[in-house]
Image (cartoon, rainbow, N blue to C red; front, side, top):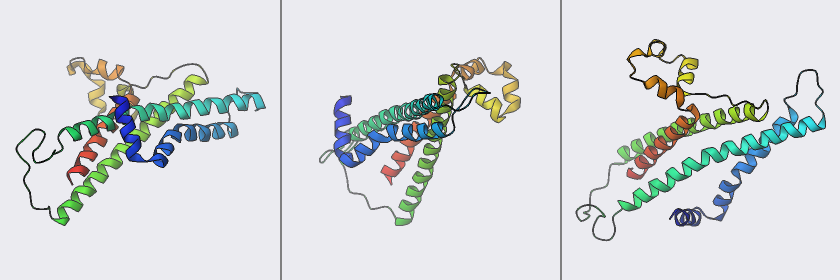
Amino acid sequence: MLLTELQRLRIEMGPRRFLVLSLAPLAVGLLAGVVYWAYPEIPEGQLPTTALRLESAAVGFLSGSASVVLFMVPVLLGVLGWRAVQRRFTPRGPSQANGPPATASPPAPASSTSLAEGFAAVIGLLSAFLGLASIGLIGWQLVHYLQPGSWVAVSVLGFMNWADLGREWVLNPTSWLGLWRALDAIPASITGIVLAVIVGGIAGALGYEA
């Protein structure tokens, strides 16, 4: 079923758009590799030799392409899921898939339609911001993991402490009923990606209704 949905999405997107989407991880990885070649991370006291530049460029390529892939997979799954739900409730013939027969309704005023489309666009921008922030966080974690060899974990609770969000609430977790343990265990990057998919689905629903 998943392969069928991917094939249908590829046909609807067209070969050019699908090729651009497929080459996005490679393009971002190459760009990151060029940046890391020009500005390599080298140990103190050593000169930027060709070997160090190649190693740094490889790290940049892997981190850049992996970040895009890690972001694209949940977004793609969310899009496929939304399309499946949309087809499930789309009217088929004279009757709805789940409801009474379809009846003609007067068109919505142009002002309300424009307002709904604008609101959907704002929510879509919020989704894109969350997704790009998650990409940046995962890329930063991968760079630290591939260079020094240690993974820097960033949890939701750690992000809240860093951003000083609800400081008194964070510093007084006795009434959380264990919620602070969950926030300390859930990665902030995965949370951002999930929120981006959810918000993107809401924007798609609003745009579809408009």
